[in-house]
Image (tube, rainbow, N blue to C red; front, side, top):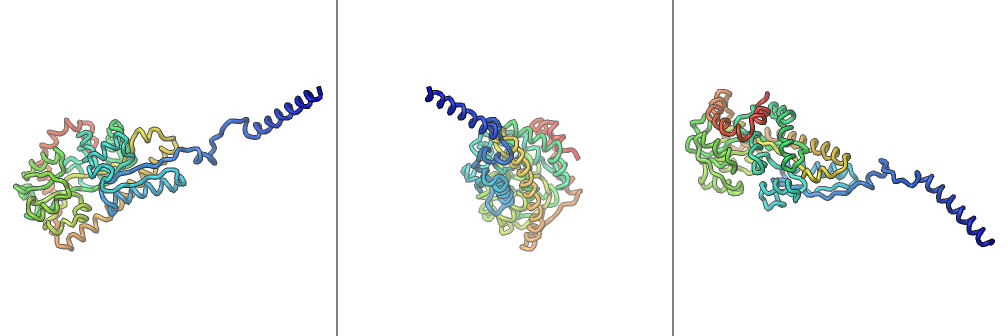
Length: 346
């Protein structure tokens, strides 16, 4: 009997102790306060692909995003950046396809490459669409940028920000191009996109497609007369060594998309989504800033190295625009009237 009484007393005492502990811990419910949220949050080790090398503004922006995310999350979110499309065997097209499918987590790619997924993305690089950076910034910060973002979401990509490969310029070894007539018969290397083929045929050239790794040798041997690319590519590839003339005609704008796989993004917590959106936007803006700053110096250096550089007048640009008008007539139905109008708003 005494044994039972002692046992009962011990049992009641144990209940009392447990009750006190539960009260002290908030009734036994798990809390998710800011002090322990990092410990409970999911860790990520992500892979990001950029088209060009580690000396590019693309890479610098990607590295900034990776560093900022790791710092703000105390190492919980890490991004490994792979240059020169290492994750897709050097193929930019496969990189954006991998991003959409989720085999690659993030990429920095041109909308020209996204045309592989949908030709509507080509609208951003329509001929002589923009006159200057001010027009570009207004469109991408407005309806045009929002429509591209929606279109990419449908393809499985969430846009963190827009970067800039720049306005595409023309180089050649034959003539100082100032008018459409100067282009007649020139063999010009272009991106392997149908719109560019149609465009350069309208301009009277003999367009040719080849991988960019072959371009320098082809120019050197005279297999082709010229090519078109943003200044940074012309400068970093030392095309001034095999090209005499550079025409700054801003004929086609080449935007970049800092994108993350949408399924991955959607699976994140609201806090992590907000973090990626904020830091992604900052990284893209940083890339635009340094790209524009460097371009001015690069043009100056190309001229100092002997290139003949020409900037067409507004009247001369108008002549080019008139010649390529059939491109708009052909591609408006492909791009969509609403999307084209959003990019033409000034």
